[in-house]
Length: 118
Length: 301
Image 1 (cartoon, one colour):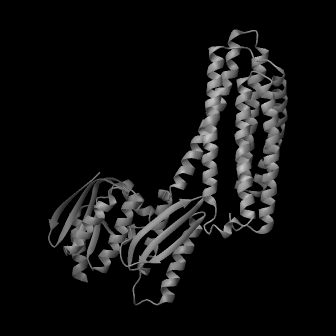
Image 2 (image 1 turned 30 degrees about the horizontal axis):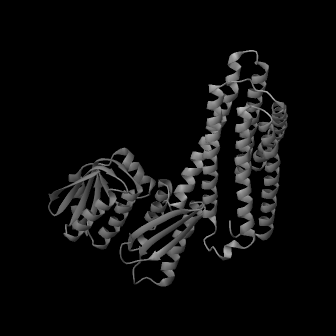
């Protein structure tokens, strides 16, 4: 079970996830992220504070989305990763691919700064 | 399995044949002992020995088939035959378990002291095999320690388990005979047979869980999925998009398909180099794996 809510933070958006991210729920997240990429938000921050478990299927969605974000020149950041989730990202060697912050506001600020610098 | 050097294949077949013949001799002795006594534990031992013989016999038949050129008709090997053989042995195990359980219940309902010539055949058989298995276990452990070989170490563990089983049956038989003046000693024999049944049940579960999942093309375990993602994250700049990952177990082999999109401006040589690096790295990290990377420009379910 995965609950997904949105919080606009112009010019970006925060997606708040709640529940488990596994083979069953990963397609749901993938579709949401695809829709948001199409909606032309300047950047997306994924709040994982209420996600206690991320399986490889979930990581795969993030890896594919990191590619999509780079291709579309959008910012993608993660925030509030629980220690066990952070560990899974590290095991998969995926932490260098994302901006990871403790709070969504910091993540948005960092993405804004990066796009301004570009 | 399907591409063994000719010599290695013949050696393997000879070893499996010798194992099957030795197993048949053991089965005949155990069946004779069980038939010539009223011991539930000897019946359980005979059924357990029979199951081991069937497993070795099926392994010999599979190796024979490979050596006779089965791989010409089976490009992906005949690994699934091993899964089917495993399922067959698993079903046999469940049938044997029912016989052991039924016999133990009968002995509990109408208990009697163990007797008959078969008891002495059984005791002799257990002493001989306890000696043989203990000696082979000792030798295997010595070789494993010297050569640092996991395969020989595993063989040593198997022989140790067999020696423990021989000792267990021997003790159960000796106690049943020596304590026959006590009424409760009549229950030693069926209790011991139930413990042997328990060990068969555990083995059957292991066989069913691995064989059934492999036949159903189960995907890779999480630890291997993480390895794939780690590899793709490490080559993040080499491809344009990740369109899907598919994996399956099939008869002891692992097949992984990764669908990637590359920059059309890249040369074929650069794409091939990236593909080779990812493929070789994954195949070295995931045992018995065959990794294919396919070009795709849309998501693959």
